[in-house]
Image (tube, rainbow over all chains, first blue to last red):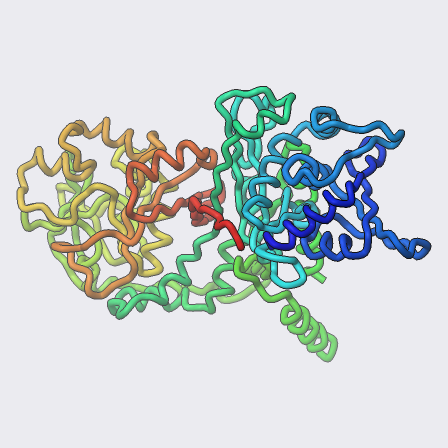
Length: 279
Length: 264
């Protein structure tokens, strides 16, 4: 993956690629040559826009983290606003942070993983902030559903994720039902000014996974249970999966006050699954 | 008749169409016992041990029970030995009495009923809360060997003051029962139990290192800083976390620090 990205970086730099911001959303569109399109696809950046009219160029839509990564970290594109005004890094940072308050921590998480050559895409459809793959999604299954949790006064009131059981267990359930491990990236800082992208080098990323442990499954490792213990187990001796499901059944309809899209979408996913199973 | 058969068949089909659980086993249907159907009450799920019930006498000063008559093999993995005497703490008593494997007596040799035992646990004065008891029962029922963290399985000395100390905390500085009880459930940064995988070769005289330590979480999940403090203090042995919700449902979680590799 590092080679693909290096090739992409070189190619975009050479052609002085320019991305155009599309409205206030923080998204941008980028026109590239065919070989660059291949690299963009292989590196899993952006979303290809079908355009039957164009023969020479291909268009991609990039999210704010992707735009900033290509601009700030890889330094291989420049960005213009929709009225052709060149946007410097500082202006881009201002725009992205004003559009989306959590942009600093989201971008730090995105950059942290991308710099380790993990493929990072939006995780909203899975109820998470990001999903991370070891390689291109077409080649591997996603390993992690990533939730970004900021920590520290600099982030103001945004530090509330995963602070209550319903939120944490909801995230765990959502990631589990799409067979991904929940990865929590805690972004901490001793105190820095988030109004400039200079703050990025002062942010520290902590990686932690949250996984369920099923005691019934671990038991298989035992040698010889004593007779009394074996008798007690009689009523519990069911296939591990059934036990696990009985243990884990949860009603996740409880109220949550966070307004993050990820949380809302993860609830949607869970209740959709619940309905599907009842019919 | 045919309609019922068709419905049942349909139910069976629907159940088999449920998506296969992934690694997280989260997709399966909920199982509800239907309380509206009149079925013969099933007491068969309860395993009776009346004939082989041990007897123990409650000792208030120790906050535990001394076994006076031991039957069966339960004692091999339950209770601690103090100066040759086998003693059970409240969660062990609760568990064993629920299984009818133990009869608890007071100092007048009268049986102490289960409601009084539940009172002792719920009161939280004897080193174990109701939630902690749920977690203890869950693992014990599955065959795990569970002991209070920091309490040695055997001690040769049986003098009263040592008994008091040893039931709560093996920490030279902490000889006061109240203080160590507070440490048990108010200080969140202490594991509650040390747990060994089910093992018929387990010996209290040389138990070895536990397979993991269990920390109980009730009100809110741990913050990153708390997790790191725990891992620093109790490093080496894996930590697992148990959440008991309002309905008494017990879930176990791992919060493992990882370092995602830099990929090629």
